[in-house]
Image (cartoon, rainbow, N blue to C red; front, side):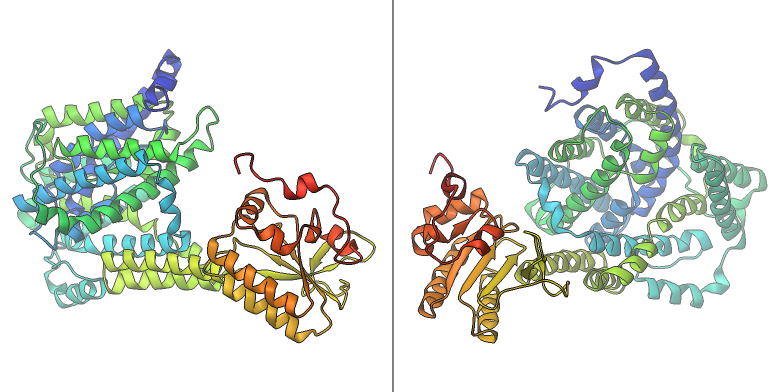
Length: 570
């Protein structure tokens, strides 16, 4: 039961000292979450109140079902941008239809994540490489930042790509509202200063209070400073999101993308925080179940898609959070705000919310990763740049799709052309190394030793065969080909057919093909396909040294039980 309801792992040992830590963290994050939630709702194209709706039920559900005890779930910038860009193509921002579709999107994301977790498919996120994720995140952060210029400058700028936004700013620079930009810049500066002093300080709340005070006491709303105005109070009633097959079909691609991206963001920060705490483990599939269920139940109470956030999780941990009780306290604080304090946000400047967003996202621009990849890995650098540019110049959805395609292409390329090393013996030892790396490695003219560092399957078996035949053509003196199978852990039916053909071709040239250090799973496949008889038991060896030491192909095989043993069920 504890496996499916992680709250049972810590609730039975809950203590007063743990509660004090959770109370401190819960209040701190709750105070931080109120202005952030409103800001991210605005970024998503929703009325600010929906940020508070998304900061209650999902937090409580995740606290019970998630395996991280410090992860702070709620609205985040990246997911908010994805909501704005995808749903914005179907309905006008802030309209009833837009709100309905955003809530439906939360339900769809939740169902996808829940199914991925139930069927233990969390490994699928591994197909998005880190350079691709970093490139997409960096581009999205810039898009988010530039999208807030209209609120920071107090001018109306239609949504568009970064270069279009910059052109609009230049064209309409004479319309800039200077009190608005002053509030925005001072808010950015204040947040940065407070973060430098102590990250536990709820800087978003402080700039909200300062911004409210400035508008109220200086009458800045009469000078063109845009404010939030009416924020409805009260907790939303339970309702199942309205849907149609047409809307589900339209939203499905982005729901799938958000499911993966939000999970990766959440899982990455959960693992980073968990490394500091050795009293629990993160279960990736249970994380999917926790996040999925949180989004599903959240959608029943008017929430848009949520996930675990970097900044709030860091603050939650630093403030002393021990368990999910901290998240429940944060949600309770947001609920109290909804019930009693929303009217106080009437004079909140939109420039302040824009400042909160901009400070949060510009830290996600990973220029250090780009520099590192430039210096260390050309292929990964190209993947980073391609994803970054596609997201910036074409759009969010094409950027995601291109990133996925690049990740898969890189995987397929590396698997199709894996490292194959020709080995030679280190003088006076029984060790073998790559002849292209060491000058003093010795090798016999009559012998070719190859190490294949990958699974042998349909994508690379023909390139392996071509490489072997090319090597043999270059050296007419070869009598034995020894394959070091230390790095070979799987072989498929296409590779079996290739080996059968290659062994036959080599026999016609009087060349013996031999295998050393064959792993158990590969031995099983050889056995089931009758390859042992075709190769000949005398041509299998425990190690390369045993194979090299064999004086001829009829050498008696020793330790047969270790060389040929297959699975007991075969």
